[in-house]
Figure 1: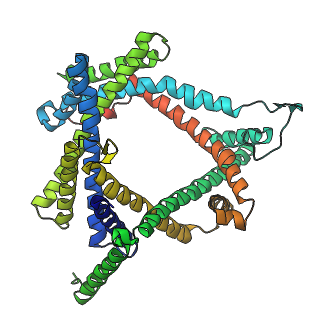
Figure 2 (figure 1 turned 30 degrees about the vertical axis):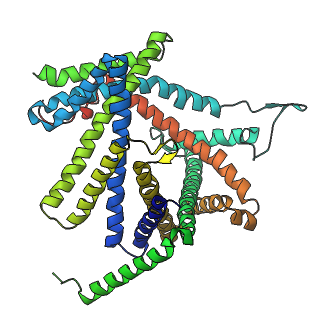
Figure 3 (figure 1 turned 45 degrees about the horizontal axis):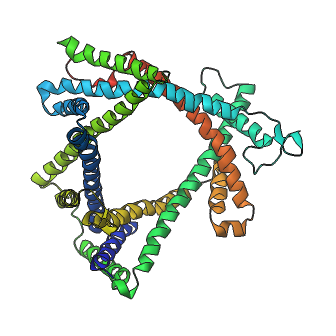
Amino acid sequence: MAVETIIGAWVATGLTFFIFSFLYKDNPLFKLAENLYVGVSVGYTIVKTYDTVIVQLIWKPIVENGEWALLIPVAIGTLMLTRYVPKAAWLSRYAFAFIVGVGSGLAIPRTISSFILKQIEDTIRPLMILVPGDGVTFTWSLLNPASSLNTIIILIGVSSVLFYFFFSVEHTGPGKVVARTGILFLMIAFGAAFGYTVMARMSLLIGRLTDLIEFTDPSYGRPSLWLLGLTILILVVMARRSSSNPPEEQ
Amino acid sequence: MIFLRRQVPLLITLITGIVFAAQYYVPHPASEQMLTSVTKWLQIIGGFALVLGVSSLFHVHAIKIRRKEAGWGYSFVLYVSMLGTIAVGLWSNGKEAVDGTMTAFGWIYNFMMVPLQGTMFAILAFFIASAAYRSFRARSREAAVLLIAAVIVMMGRVPLGEYLIPLSGDISQWILNVLNASVRRAILIGVSLGTVALSIKIIFGMERSYLGGGKE
């Protein structure tokens, strides 16, 4: 096995244990790994942005293809940096005005088309479905999201939730029933989102544990076992030291 | 001077806003080309915005190190890891692998970033479970509904859950595909209406907070 892979296994295992040590309590090992994570992530983003923006989008098109028009966004971007010069900071407004203007202009028609009209179209579907062999029929299957029964449920859900957030009308009488139906739909969706998130995190946890189990292999030098012991030892030493030197009361 | 500082930015927003809203309704190659170009322009300008964010991070930690504030050593670790990653990344030309061989930058990605990111999110599983244990009490009918939906979805996503409650997989799918989808759709419609309203206010200069405060 390559030396860099073995070193990588030791580093990855150590960092994993340092982060997991937070489950015991906040400690210097966790803070070390946490700051390392921020540093590496920011460094990675900077390098990737440099490669994508400076090299691929600016330097190569200008030098190789003579696309001099790209100097315009470079100039607009440079205006942003005038924020560091107090007297010229107002120039950065031109850059923000351009970004916000373009963003707003692009958003209006696309949002109306994709997120309003398309969503309404998918909500108000025909109740009767053409089933080959059976002709036009009402389908009762709950397991088929496109069934007639589910179409009615989705219509009730969308309408009641929208009504719940519509505060121009007082929620009394029949309106109260609709609003409470909306709350029930919302609670089910929040519960489902919570359950889904927990399971996604569990999946990540399983991934990390799988790596730790793999790194118990002798071909890596058993980093999982050695570093687990080392992490526990450091935590015990630090706990003893802090108990023998309790913080002075103010 | 107020015209240059206040009116010109509003004019830029108005013109670009109207032009790019109208672009959607002009199915001409020149219009499509304009959209492609401005998308590239926004990416380039976004790169400069990153400079602002990173320099702010540099500044905050530099002050901590200079004043030797509590925990300045961690700021030093952040600095070293960030500069180290940048140096290695530039040396590797921003590539994680060349001809199938992992570069030093790829090593940092595979053996530092991925484990750190994965573990950081994985420990949230414990905290979410612990928070749920403390706060999930079926005190009202709504809370009970939320709790039951969460349990069914969790059971339906793992083989053990389906083994214990055979129908949990199907019910979980139904909750996600029908009930959850209808709520997401309603929220999406509401948020989109808000987005359109805000965009119109920005284009016509009724919303100006993006220009920041300070002197006119």
